[in-house]
Amino acid sequence: MSLSQVASSIPASPTIALNEEARLLREKGEPVIHLGIGEPKNKTPITAILSSAAKLSGGDVKYVPTDGTPSLKKAIVRYMEDNYNRAAAPYNVIVSDGAKQSLWNLLFTLCNPQDEVIVLAPYWVSYPEMIRMIGAIPVVVTPEDGTFVPRFDEIERVVSSYTKAIIVNSPNNPSGMVYPEELIAKIVELCESKGIYMICDDIYNKLVFDGRVAVPAYKYTGKDVENSKVIVVNGVAKLYGMTGFRIGWVTAPRKLVEIMTNVQSQTTTCVSPVMQSAAEGALTGMQSVVEALRLTIQNNRDVLMQELHTFTDVHCIKPQGTFYALPDFRAYIRKSVANSSAELAQFLLKKALVVTVPGKEFGIEGHLRLSYAGSVKDLTEGIERMKWALDPNAPSEIYIGDRKLVRDWL
Image (tube, rainbow, N blue to C red; front, side, top):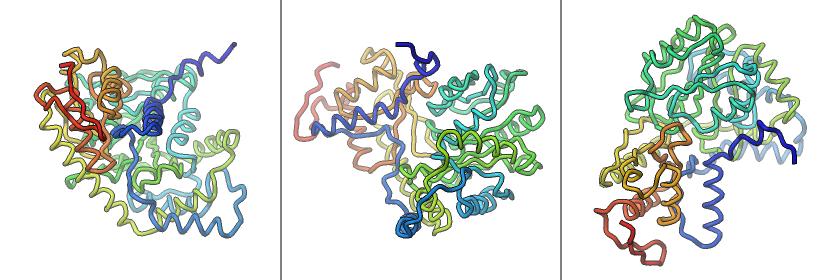
């Protein structure tokens, strides 16, 4: 069988693959704890439900404009004003089936084959693969000092005549770090001066802790949306816990949005008006639901850090936002429980029935990404199982479900 070399070279999303493996184990009745999925457990905001229900009950669910319904785009324009202090016009906005498609459309529109896109490690797993799929080249910048925040000189060093864009994800998935204001300011200045696009993946922009603020890149440019090199990708999945609604958007110069609209018209045609109505309901409804989710997630973060501190030889930089942490498990890889983060994740799934995501997929080997978007019970029991499986100082016996297990491999 002859298949596309590009398509054949793209691996499955590791998070989706792990989700499927966990689902199959649960169907067999196994008491799996999922610390891998980035999905809040809150209920969908009532304003989103009512708005989508009204659309359905009206019975008029037909094609809508490819770039988004006028009313949702108006809500996004208001969101930009309220949260970015930046005026945008409806023609600066395109709505897509999730922030992932938004990012894909954007990269496809911006890049020619062999163009370079700078990716800051640790990075979301799909960035490099999307870049490769469109024939461009991901240029990964990994912090040399062992932190999760790159230095500006490390970024500047890899800029070339082929550099088309820099993707900045702050608050960051998977580390939970919020990039310092001075770093954001310098990247904006670099991009504006050299004509490089700064793609801001702001999907977690309000999920920050301890009084921090994820300062928008627009703060550091005097140019308006139409003339700036700053582009913002956002959506309702994370802030409102609406992962299944698949609504994302891009705010960018008009010409760019027009081309992205042409691209989308040849792929998905338009986004479901029912889902767009739900997103509109979330954006225009009471925003206290976002703050309630943020407080819940911050409490979960504190519980996770408390549990990890009791884990021998595990070190973790305290997350400042999102609902992810990226603890360092290299000590256990060196102790030959596993030879890589991928093997360690498989070991924990097999022995402890805990789902984690290998750090290698995010550009940081030796670490595991843990999501604390779930319940406190899952966090505490999940870490207890991980300690039992890995830590020789932990008790050798544990109950998982109704089975008593004895550790005999350390």
